[in-house]
Image 1 (cartoon, rainbow, N blue to C red):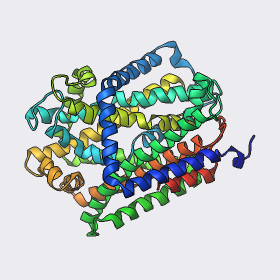
Image 2 (spheres, rainbow, N blue to C red):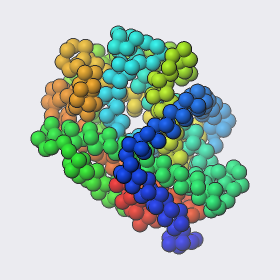
Image 3 (cartoon, one colour):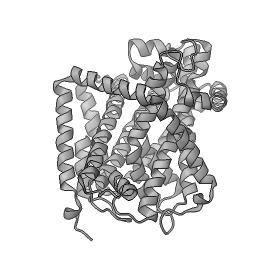
Image 4 (tube, rainbow, N blue to C red):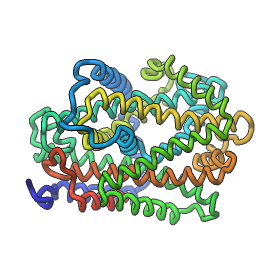
Length: 454
């Protein structure tokens, strides 16, 4: 076996680091021009490819359901028994696939849909309010997780069944096309993946830091400024650097369990101490509306309108999930050895969807209850003071609100650390040549990427 030094793809690491620093410098020196360029690219992509993306995501969901129910579902991804328990495996997958900003959207997203709803529903109407939770269920539900699952199955089959070397996006493409993963095209694919991963993670970092410091300020009186936000990111960075150094079994697995149980117990307590009947009815109603309108939501393009909702929400979300897909697939491949294809499909699609629906359903329904009963005008707070303040006020309105807010912030910071740990692992795997089944990237390389993304 090659030594750790030789296995590191030094040219790829060097080029990607230079590219990331160059992009960061451009964003810092020319913020307005960079934002205009990004918006122009985004508008072009969503207008040109938006409908195709919607269809492809729907087809991906159909394909994974077919695989799960066909003879192919019995194919085992690698020899031996699964390395991790089903619960630990599911928690780690969720932490890899979801950013900590999920906790922000899990409280506030409904208010955006209430003000600018889809399906040509009148803004701020009763129908818009009724469809606000179902749209969250749709965007964080089966379609999104099916996208992750399909990519994970392709990668896992390539790595565990076909025994192809290299846990990277270029390795997959090489196995399909015959292009050398170490050639210029393979390097370009991996370079684009590394840059896109850092970019996607940056958005999650910004949302998390802003939400955390706003809540911390309400609890402690500390100022909500850049210095405190930087400290929060560094604190989380320290946690996940330590976790990455320890390794998946003793580091990420433990962090993901803490996140998983925290993200389950928090809404469970809200359900118990909050308006239980209203929350339960709201969740059941949202499941019904999501199921009834699933195809229309999936293929709604608004041809007679401006299509802004579809572009800004549905297509944006599908592209967001797709941007994370290669990294999530790599990580899922690492932790899914020994499982059958149908186990992976049903576990990831149903387990992850139910988890998201429970968190979003409880937290959003409670926020809606506070809104319609005149306790907190969440949409108005969202517009005037920002979503972070809206989240903080919703949590503080609970009995023992400060304790709930503190618990929420605790789960958020650990969620951020576990997600960044999983991302650092996939980046290290990408920049390691010919990684084989049973191998992990060099610990020093994982730590290097931890420092870079912090």
